[in-house]
Length: 165
Image (cartoon, rainbow, N blue to C red):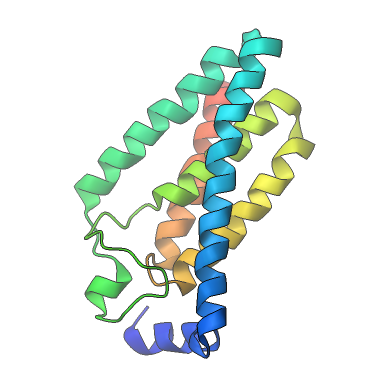
């Protein structure tokens, strides 16, 4: 992605302040929803489905640590740093763009819901993950490859951690 391409994809969202506010609010609301849903799921598992507890805790937790370390090793500059523009989503962080930890988290949490409740319960989280991935690219804080890598690692770690190992 270059600066011109980013301007082109973000232009419809930059046209008025209300749209920018909506993008920011939607990103914040979806992030908050996912980060409330996981502890709620863990509380449910602890009370009603203890056989799922340790795996539902260890798989996302250990992979979160892995993804955090991977970001530090790769240390890819964020689009707004490399292409020198003001992002729609306000972010002050430097580097550590690849893979997107937000998107990884949504997808591994979706896989955790699938593990505990079946595929139907995970669909809303996969939809939220796709919307958040689009918001984070349009918002200028991640490249498409960052969010794709985050989603892939989240899904693969769920498959391996919940169904293979």
